[in-house]
Image 1 (cartoon, helix red, strand yellow):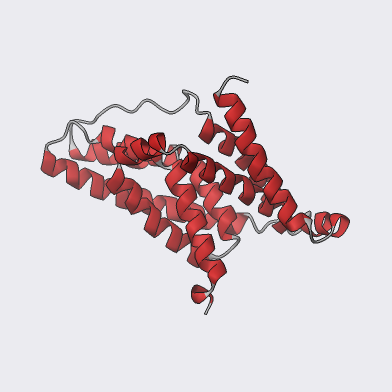
Image 2: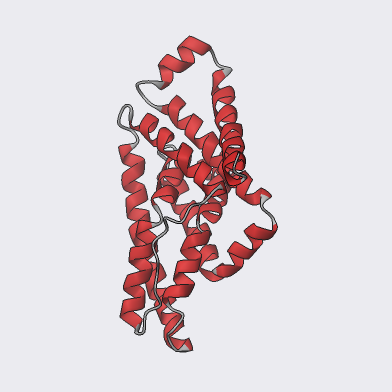
Length: 222
């Protein structure tokens, strides 16, 4: 069975790493949106909001996995992932401002809406890494999203203390971008035919290193 192969679990690990790297802001939003609620209601808001956010994100990821089977859309997805990976290492101030809600259902709505608006990068990354395998999507999301929710602001502190994890996540997204170019039904065979089999590793490795260099230079104002 595919689930017992090394490649399957490596792909699951890649999806989890990308979700954790990209999910810090989402965890902070969850904490902020429910901050003013009483302790018991806060737990309910986080639970209900998270279930809704997970369901919505999973449906969107399934849709993205299907859409990326259309010729040239893998290429477009790969291109869109490059600035996402760079932004991970040199974030700006464009994240929406989230205010704490004063009742349960307002907090739930805020959590679901904010998670959706801030998860386009996660959806593209997971869809690309899954390469059409819906089982990978389920495994990756079901493992990483609860970690993000339970960890909340702790994840941000860990990433601040160990910034190498951010670079690992960015590199993984860059690698996924390269594989999306190669897996595109229309352009992939052209690239492989023109360059040979070595490009299957060279292109993802180049983009993985490239986004790390660009992100480092941008974050240090170079």
